[in-house]
Image (tube, rainbow over all chains, first blue to last red; front, side, top):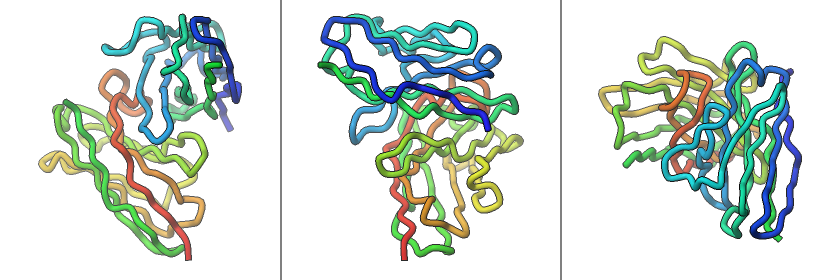
Length: 107
Length: 122
């Protein structure tokens, strides 16, 4: 079955740039979305349609796509960015699915 | 302000049924697709089911197909999930979410409720 693959964890120091990748064979044909989830809270959409940022999301969050990999980039990471991040897309039949999630640790 | 409020969760025995509800406000409910997404304790997110604005398009994850039924009542701004033949592996926090910025049934999930906990155990 189709899967979206994310690294389990990424660690960065405050002020540095964090990059979280998500790989999947259908990504060249399907948009990717990114969600931030802090402990005990519901997920929040931070990137849609590969690289668009909803209003209210800080400019340090950006998304990009290249072939079968999409990347969430957080520039100038702040302590408040520590969270789990999930990519989401759809398979070839249009069924939504999520990546396994990446825990971002701010050192 | 968009608000999604789930209810109906609880402790239920394996094989029994439960019906979840989601009350929506702050947006034009009957213009947008709605979804259920769940998260087992300590685990990642799993899409469960989605329904288009007019109920004309409905989808289910393989893990719940044939057991769960999604529906909506646009007159009541409400989304439902009828869950039958519940299993221990259905234990999760169930979120209601809408799709505003994308395609009906592929996502994204723009706004989320706070979830309602379903525990399946004898």
